[in-house]
Image (cartoon, rainbow, N blue to C red; front, side):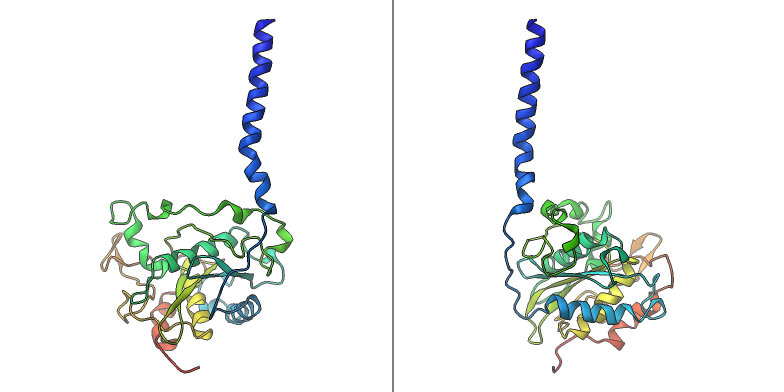
Length: 269
């Protein structure tokens, strides 16, 4: 009898403990959504229109597989200002790319400053085992609230991640910092849904169309934050490199011409 009573007591204690742990998670989805301050950044409608126009160019001009994309913009505080998809419905893109796009934007914003820009592609080499930034990808855990909410709102102006500091670090291509025409960093853009190299290409073109690419300086040979294809025998010669991507159309030539065809730097509106 004593053993049975003890087991019953332990069971109640376990349920109470589990309930206390679960309470914050159960409460999380009902937290009020905060409208972020996003000066100088496009709204969701503008972002989606530009992303769709670039994605429609297809694999021949963007590389990769011609997939639909998720795109996210964060402000300088890392709060999500907009999250959109290019397809007709949210299922037209890889579901996992929603959060990845936002984390790419967070990474590019978090690691770029007023005088120097780093794309997520630029931190790939240093984040590998044995290199100077190894474990970078685990340094800023993603905000778990990003996965909560009604899925029918994902990719809309009422997406539950809007207004939240998304967190997370991604160390492959597809995230770019955003600079206004006067050179001020105002946030960052993240694209996900195809090969990471194609995500970078599309992000680059979208940023250019939004006139948010007055990049001050960066590690690429063209002194901006373009993807650097200099891996040889598993080592980046510059320390800022990213490997070529497999899958679909090769994008190396497109990447190498981005600075020429879509130059960065201050320009008129």
